[in-house]
Amino acid sequence: IIRKALTAAGELIPDDISMDIKRLPPIFISYQWGSQKTVLKLKENLEQAGYACWMDIGQMGGGDKLFAKIDAGIRGAKVVICCINKNYAQSDNCLREVHLTISTSKPVIPLQMEKQTWPPEGVLGPIMSEYLYIRFYDRKNNDANYWPTDKFTELLGQIRYHVAPDPDMITQQYYN
Image 1: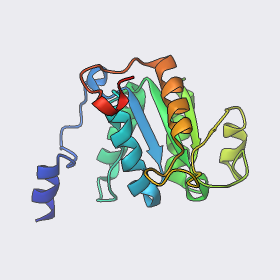
Image 2: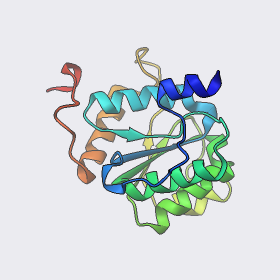
Image 3: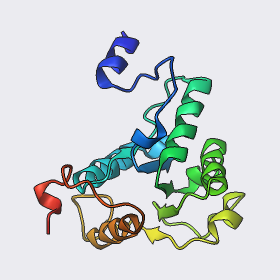
Image 4: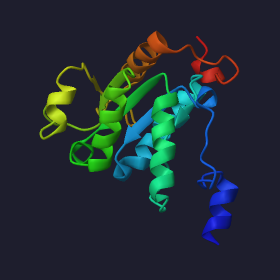
């Protein structure tokens, strides 16, 4: 039942993981699975703004195949967005993704997803200390999304520096 549902949703990891890196989405979203709901909303908005994204959806096994897909996703990306919260900073899997991103010289855009010290405490601190982050968590004046509108605009500007949006993907909301 689960396999059938995942296949229908297009999220099943195929046995043949050979991926054409040139056809992978230009944006890889790295996040800790506990914040998946918020990150899915971010992915949806980025895609409406014209940027195809790849993110690992779910904790449904996958093992080495999942790690291989994540590896290919990072290597094929033009830019990696790191959605950092306290759990992200303590996650071995997220740390592996950051290390691969850095070692493959991919541009990193860190999003601070909750109030925390910057750089984050722990092993991730020395790595992230070199990057400017976008404070992406203030909801005071914006109930529609988790993030302030001006911060999403800032994110789009940073992404645009590395990759142009796909005009065919842009929805009316993001034409301006």
